[in-house]
Image (cartoon, rainbow, N blue to C red; front, top):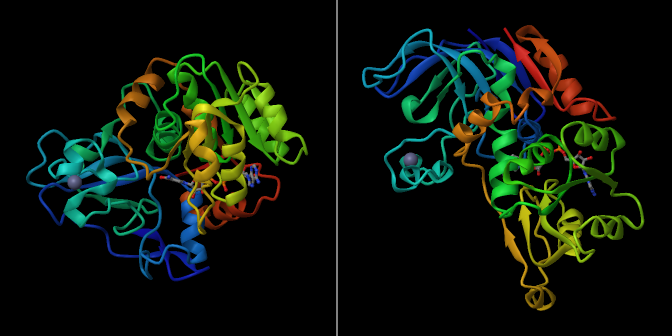
Length: 349
Ligand code: NAD
Ligand code: ZN
């Protein structure tokens, strides 16, 4: 088969590799029908994720069709269309039992994330470990694009942003950074009843995309009075109830501390390459909660029911489409388009 293989920093190739085969009885093999690219793939390609080594097949978001099942798999069969989330779930360890598979103990305390420690989904076929406890059937009537972004961008924005942020009905939520993950938070904050969703970014395209995807307000982070503008949009001008950091730099973390109200929550989603200042000596008096975390993909069923009922139009994140022979073009557009014209690219057979 062909797959997109990582060959060290700045190097990848769509090349011939052996087809995956069943290793454990709980595996299935799936034909990948549709996949996409994540900002994390770009971090890997820069060499920022040392756990990913030469020869690893990239990608961790896909919709596919089961082609082969292991001997212990009883409720999936060839022909089933499945959503393959970024993180697998062994279903047995103490973490997976409580739906926290990003700390699955079966692999030694770090989740089985495709395209990281196991081969990924930017390939014609993929081996899916612990298939029965990890994948979700595509409901009748939904197509691949309806559910593709439930594999990472949307659950990350929802779980680590909106839910960790303890979003309550009527809350004002500010999402700082309107990339695919921040937009995932924008799109799902309404599911918890947020009254106002303020998108904050420096890029006008991103702000327009956020308004299109459900933000009620947009503030340009480059405006000198951006903090005041955001606070003015909160219920009583005292600050937002939930500030979601979805960039991963000290400056935007600081912005979140500046815009959150007393008793509010800063939900950090961004992956920070450097330490950030957490001025506890000033913050304690504000009763602010700061949260952070790695996505579990534990809410895919919930998000799926929202898609099925029409409450969540996940497919609206798709802005560009490519074939499997166009991975280079797809990466180029996703990584390099200076004006952020792409939200998510869809790569299909
Ligand atoms: P992205 O780079 O595509 O988007 C970031 C956005 O932030 C862009 O729109 C950019 O214009 C904006 N931005 C940059 N500087 C800014 C500033 N000073 N003020 C306001 N906006 C600014 O990233 P993404 O793929 O959407 O991911 C967002 C973050 O989430 C990244 O740090 C990523 O690593 C992280 N992430 C975390 C998890 C998790 O499990 N916690 C999972 C996936 C991704
Ligand atoms: Zn586990």
